Length: 357
Image (cartoon, rainbow, N blue to C red):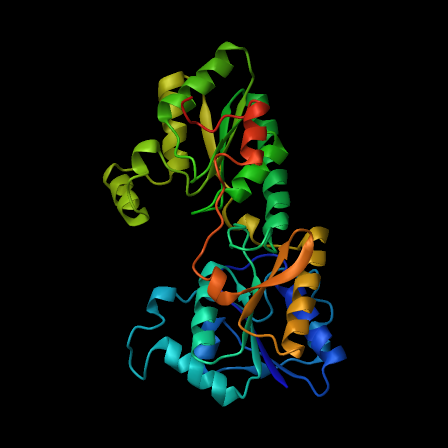
């Protein structure tokens, strides 16, 4: 059997660990297994590029960050748009057949899974593996790369806290997460944030400033605020992302974190600063939890392929590795519920979410 592997979308820690696990399982358990890597995600499949992967290619990559296959983003909305030579989807289907693949492993996030579902509908034998530091893929308790990002962001938050306390400042730390606030929520709780602002809970400037003022009046030396990059003001909640960006540009604002730091300084008199962690959260060596998770997910995906079970994505749910049909999870997201146990717990220990009671 011939198997293809690609990594699509944003990079994260653990991609190589999954590639390694898939490769080793197939080589050890499938007779005459032939494995090819497809470079640059779906971009490589669109161009019809691939190269053989041998046992030595899977050595010494368990702890290696990034992806040996490289990756690109291919917007889902452009997949079926007519272009010269056919749509991107039609090119991928043609090249899938030309390569003679018996199965294609797609390692990626929500967009990657939506495109994988399209390939499945066109007859491709596809198996997905859920990757994203946002942890927002429906049907799985956790995605690989998430825990490493939490560890990295928490360490950065700890370091910034020492500066905040030394200078008696309000420090806002911007953490990745456009649609879902899982990374910010887990980091904020783990790092002892005083306030957590996430996309699912639009915040009030008044509530934020009142909270900071109360802490200053109580003699607190500093205030630490974890802010998801997709966090939004309460009056912005009615806007779509594109419209929200337009309004902010018209007002001369860049990120919500920078705007919030300026407002806090102006309204409360407290010295506020902000730090954007950015790509720091996606790079580097996967933590032990992710190495184990990646190994289990990759091996299970390869096991499904060997058994002829296609059109699925693997998942980790109820403390075990399982799978979901691509058709059931593609296009769906997992969001933080304001009524969830973890949010209630955070509130119970005094963490504010910038929402008026």
